[in-house]
Image 1 (tube, helix red, strand yellow):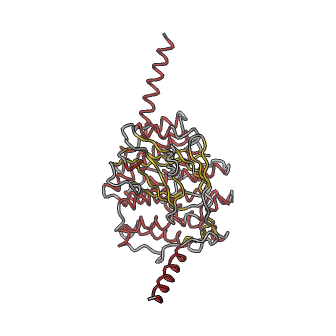
Image 2 (tube, chains in turn yellow, purple; image 1 turned 60 degrees about the horizontal axis):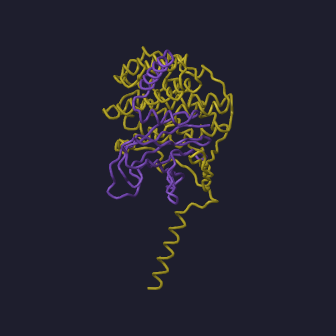
Image 3 (tube, helix red, strand yellow; image 1 turned 90 degrees about the vertical axis):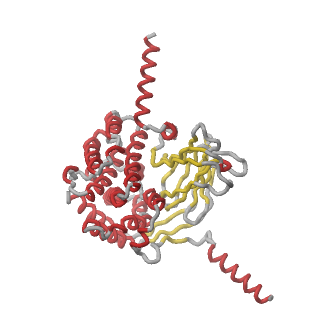
Amino acid sequence: MKGKSILLLLIILVACFSCRNSPNKPSEFVFPETDSVPAGEAEKLSAEAIADISNNITSPVEIANLLKIMNVPFSPDYLAASIDANKQPTAFDKALTLGILGADLGYLNMYEKTGSSIDILSSIRKLAEGLSVGQFFDFETIKRLSLNKSKLDSLLFLSIDSYTQIDKYLRDNDRGQLSALMIIGVWIEAQYLATQVVKKYPDPMLRDRIGEQKIILNDLIMLASPYCNRDSEFNSLCRDMREIKDKYRDIRITYTLGEPISVEKNGGLVIEQTETSKVEMTGEQLAEIIGITASVRDKLVLNN
Amino acid sequence: MKKYLAALILFLVAGFIVKGQITDPLVSNCVLNAGPDAKYLKDFRVQLGKAVIAGEPRYKAQMSLWKNTKYRFSMCNSEDSNGKLILSIKDNTNNIVLSSFDQKTGKIYPYVDFKCNKSGIYQLNFDFTGGQQGSGVGVVSMVK
């Protein structure tokens, strides 16, 4: 009896310590065990899970904000200027392009290059109407806000909210494949922006942000997985996404633990996280990510 | 008299413009009151009935938060809410990284600024105080 009790105590102790995060020992982010997403599993994704994945994708506005913090000047060279909204024959092309232009719109808005965004807005309108989701894009108000250089926050809200509503409508109406394409389009263009800028401005913050995309890449691929065998276009896109993921395989993201510091300020609460994440990525790995991102993005944009 | 007339016209036009920009007044007020430097990212519209048993937050959503970014989480309630909207955020190890409700003092903060130093996927948990009925919105913005 005594022996059994000691054994039980030992098991509990081992279990407790093996689950506990040691403050001195950094943990590490790894891709899920199988490193691939079985299509069957992905098909089981609930509406909530898909909504969560959609929330997890880096917003192009956040990338643009980071560029502004780094004092990187605006450049129209990063925009997908060659896209012609009239030459998008399939729903696949329209949805993907809608995503790409959405990211460009976020970049323009953040830099308050709102006068130049009118062409992109017109293209977005055509594409949204082509997918029968034009009713969610308040083109006239966004255009008025852009031309008048009105409050940036209202402009950002309307632009982002329009995309959120389109995304939700597509998912609610069994057109999840178009929602997935739009989200992937947004991500690829934002990733392209980040990777092109880092070539000229190799700031550690931007470098880290590129490396940290490993955290959400699996989710992004999971979003597309149910449709990979749908047609040749989807098949090719899924292959491209997996190629990008391959370039991230050996990048390490480690975490160190710490307690948050909080202070009251002006009636609100200000919290600084002392836990940190660290990206370990060589110059060669970054160069490969820059290369594959440009290749995939250019293929999508120049096909137009 | 002319001054009053001009002020009235300005008021009506401004009201029309704001209404045209953002239709849901609860969301629009919350977005516009997030602060002059706040840049809108996302909102979570929360509508909950009275909980049978008050406990775990009932509205859960995920969001990625990125290192070197300062986020502002603003919570706003509709007038007919019985409870006040509160937010707590957990990281991927299920640790609470922030809460707009101080359990020790019972204080509820209308906004929380969070300087993120660990990129990852976080879980946002919303509920109304005491599991009461309410509708509200949590707006996420970036601040300097």
